[in-house]
Image (cartoon, rainbow, N blue to C red):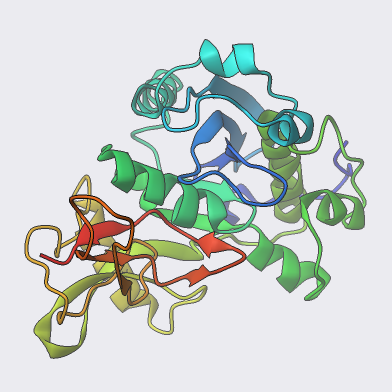
Length: 303
């Protein structure tokens, strides 16, 4: 329950509504399957004037590359194989969610996506949509990472979502790593910060910025932009385009600078496995380590 008796100024917030999401994806205990795919798509609607959780949306999503969930994934998320087997493709889930926002009268209002961390929009949804060439609604290209205002209010303490909810004085409700329960608890934490008078603003966005030597790449904005006017102009330019495609997709070469979906300089390698592709160069995600593997599924042949 939220604390009672805290006045809330409805005019304080920039946004009329907040749409809180928390995706669940295919995973394993040691090495996550590649590519990771969203398997639960939940969303919770919060009215900024009242702080109330007005409605929720949920659908399970059927993975296409790794169709069978690992035992670890089922135990962690509580999602069973039959639920994803009966789920919808990600493209359909995005359409269903968009229609839900439209039916609720939210699409024509000023609203913001809210997440706990940047993973949902910056990494998971962005990389999967690019990998599968899915057009996602442009409102997913900017979001509020609730970790940022939480740390401003409660200090720079390292904690996960459940610990943050409990640290704020709220009681955790539901199952951790159930997407809908996580989204609801994130929404409750959001409402608590609203009741404390915190004014929310966009913390992160996916925007196009010019790279050195007059090339173009997909760069990610910092948590706080030093120039809000300039950031808003870039954001407006980005929102006018429903999808951003990698500008190097058609014209690549081993000696040319390439940027992967997560915004860093990609790394090139060579196919060593015997076969028709042996000896060909290709680009992959630059955020790569032997233990963590790649952070996004970027791939492009060098020629």
